[in-house]
Image (cartoon, rainbow, N blue to C red; front, side):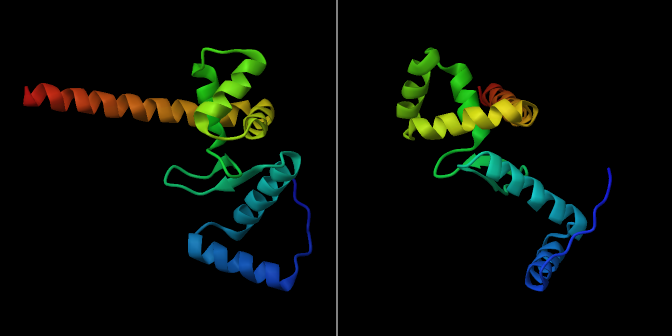
Length: 138
């Protein structure tokens, strides 16, 4: 990794310092994250990033997480353009939001696939725990 000195406005730097202090994340890492996310959002209008218990993830503005849309796409029986319109109807969002998620996935498949895998693993863990609980109560 190389470094490049940059100038940051005083107000922005102060806000960054406060955010760093509040989150415990080093200011350089936080600034890099915001720059990276800003570049991704510029490249993919309609995507922003949300913090959650499992970490930050790409989200479609006014819609679900990108990984949720991609996961639903994979599980849908339709294909092609019919898939986009059918999924938009099932999820209650516009076709354009489905396309935003597809384009984002095209550039960041490893990131989205990791979210899908983590969700699948958690679902399996919860199903196994529920099965053990049912067995114990039978």
